[in-house]
Image (tube, rainbow, N blue to C red; front, side, top):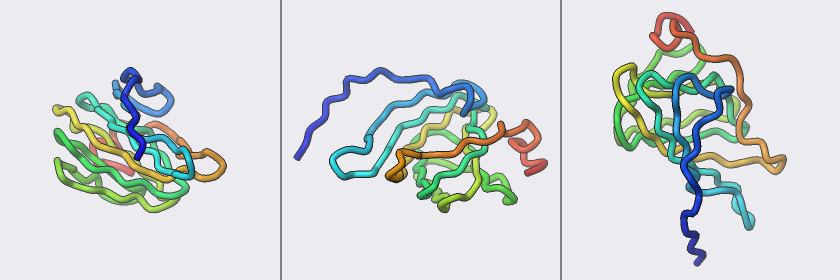
Length: 134
């Protein structure tokens, strides 16, 4: 058993990866043979990720609020507490809060041997976020 005390401060998501304000708390980092990365991600209303992919896929579990998620070419889906979304390896997608609600999810993924967790793309436009294109 390994107990790790939380000593890290909440971080703000990088502007290159997010539209709006997003807060990040690290829950697990790859170490000692584990490739698991897990974060608690809190999106302010209207905040969202940029389009991105994960080489080994990603699972998000909504724990609070109301959000949105979309894979490239698919519909914008509303996501709520208890919902789990799995994005396939290499599947281009985005996720974030609804326009008028906060949303927190736990994001879990495997980091490759090369240390890459995600490949980031273009920002999600207001039209894409509103479900009018994508």
